[in-house]
Length: 185
Image: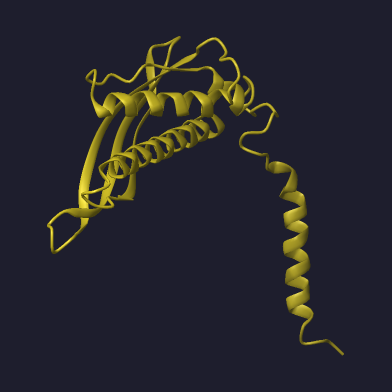
């Protein structure tokens, strides 16, 4: 006599056997194993990217953000170690936005603001001078402005928001470049 759960058990066994067969096909994205296409691991390819200085007007807030974004990206690509010889060049352009989210109805002063960075980046293969990746990314973070008496706290909140947004931009660009090096698209 057949159990009513037999078809369900059979499907489960079939799914587990298929999963076992394909288990060797997966590898960690940032692992040390070589890529199937040859030429080293994703980490090796990322450390071969030369990040050009981000062109911004000197003495402006966005100049500091450009340096912070580049520093975060360099650390993300090399892991803090020395960079390999450059095979790729990364060019980045930044723009920023600020938006008042909550305004105090008594004083008409902003209490919470959103800070945003929009980045456009291009990865160029140095050997062929061909653009291999074009992309855009953005980051939006919010921060509080505690009031008229605490101006320093408001400035520090903005600076922290800028740093957080720069880190998100660097993480997004690294993820996109890793995807390109792993999949080739």
